[in-house]
Length: 328
Ligand code: PMV
Image (cartoon, rainbow, N blue to C red; front, side, top):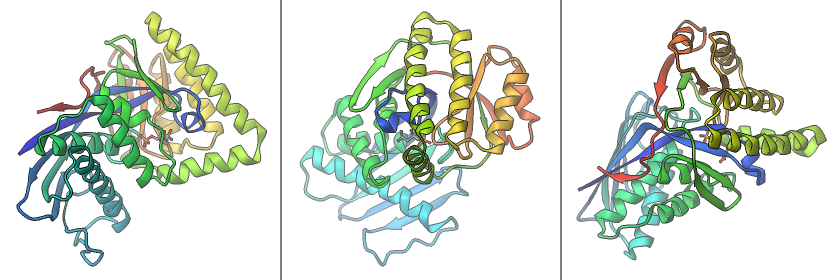
């Protein structure tokens, strides 16, 4: 039996634009997914996931099309979750050069599903690490990131960037631009506060919506390259540890994302509540449409204000973590 964990992430800058080759800077947070893998004597795959902020579901799955799981959550969500796990296992089998094997897999996660905090990437990264170790092979974090990216890209119909998976595998703040990924310096004590509206956005639909806008309006493609310029300035501010400048750029990044149509009423409410409470800056994180915002505030004001903001279900502080995927 092997357990591995991998962190979720927030986007400081650059989501959506990263899909079109602009740079993005996500940053790993100490909210983790833990995946335990045990090899079975047959070739079946059994997955239980009790804590994915669904109501809790357990799926018995043997890869057969007829094996429809009896669960109390939308079928599409279960199928997506199962595709991530199934593809992660296939990557592990390939990496370990094993033709077929069955596993008992149990997933626990502190990361809300589909809320912009990289839950699926963390589960995929931790699953590949735990399953390859269970098969006697240890992969580098870079190779896990690469294999996890291919899983996300397949499940998300070719619309994934390398940002989530690279960040989750490596930890810390990273920079992703097309296929080029690297770790960058960021202040380890960034005062991150997260507001969560209890919902989630449909990443595929939101990415497609931005693509449509970009095809229709020059302003939208200009907005995407402006986000790229902003990310480059953000990197300098991070290297200098200039929290005020980082916050200012986060505010602008949120405005540009709103122009691309990926904010929502609850995300906008939370962003404004954070700004009114004195945060250095606030923006939505991830695909948008619902889910989480990230704000920078060293005081308790933003967290308190968010707790009283209509539409905010939970507010919490998140520590940046340098620990990427790791065996538990
Ligand atoms: O909501 P998340 O954490 O899946 O982030 C999506 C980020 C996008 O840039 C919109 C898509 C991607 O794969 O980079």
